Length: 342
Image (spheres, one colour):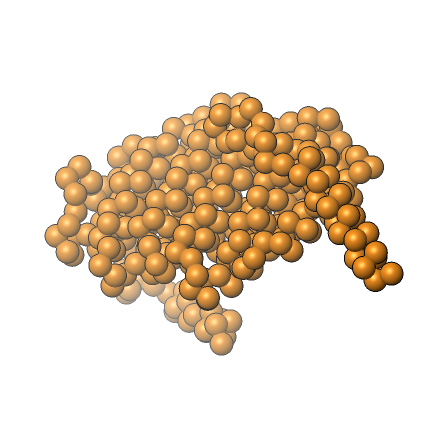
């Protein structure tokens, strides 16, 4: 009797695995630039539970933390493909189900990536996670352009999951290879700038502001990577990458600033301030080591509109002209920061 039951279980297991392979295989949709996997069974199907079973089986049979992280990323991309399909069909609730699943799989990939790095079993899982989630941001740009209004919050949450995955991957990668981490981050920033420029062309103020919110977060990752590279042998290369990239960023930001209406300009000005700060820090470090490349200027504000320069480049106030109230306010702010850190 027990032998017969085992056979029945094996047959059922085999059936589920075959169905999973049929509906969640890695056949790729026609997308030369971003290559999304086939959506397979979608959330609006009564057989969607089979898709979930298949993925649970796939994770169960993936041996080791690194294998599970890669499998979770694979399934996250399938959820993105489902979200895109649901967006095309204008099915907001089903799309939300897909994006929720995407966030869950990205979280699992982060967890397993961290386990794999602690075990020291892989040198490139952090790079794989960072590259994948950076690509996901571009995919979500396409999805948000076609979703119904009520589904945009779900896409925003999915973007948050992507950026979280990217940040975690970059931080771990930077500990081993800060140059590669910075390259990936700068490419992601370039993607956000391209998105902002495209949205500015369409006069989509909300889209421009969203792109620059992402830009700020990614710029923050860049500062972290730069700090982690300090004292390492390849920190000069990191600073050179930053100096070149931020100079280009400011040129693009100036172009976008000219295109957008007034309410979107503050977001761009914040992005300019971040780029100027990053550039100045990189140039200062390179000059101290005599490693500043030719063609990199310490004055990157030439292309910035004059009225923006006045806001961003305020002259320093002599200490004698600083009021007692201003000093007290600064002290209070510092004390609050110290308390938060404790």
